[in-house]
Length: 205
Image (tube, rainbow, N blue to C red; front, side):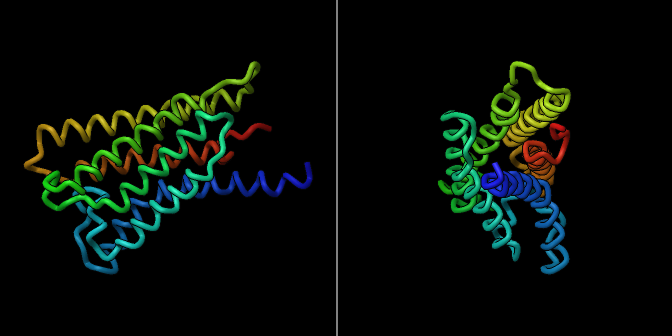
């Protein structure tokens, strides 16, 4: 056990790191673009930071999340498949940029699809994979499951809200920041879910 403990602790630390990336990303992009580049505060959506001075932070953060997802090892093949798919679609978000004009290019359509599937997979992690119970779950495990359920639900609701907005209010997307804040809610939920999985909230005693 002593030989494996450092590896276990490193893996838990990686989960927490991914969680913090999700939580901090929209705020770092928003503040950095405003402070260092005098840009709009905030942009209409998180993906629009690809075209700002925060481009490298945006792409680098997504690549870091993708790398962890590729190396993520869960309890079974389903966990591993979900991790690999999440990593694949995270790279799609990073390397197929959206368009300032909306879904008017093939890359922006690929980007939109990748973002939707990425968050959907993260919601599956929270709602179904993280919440699997042991035969005799502890109180801490039950509390964590409630957090996972809330986080997964927030991600699903955020996705639906973005889809509805895009379908019925597309003409307002250049001025409105609705999508940015909906994406921020989804990223916060993603980050809190993985922080909890990393033992930051309600760890077993």
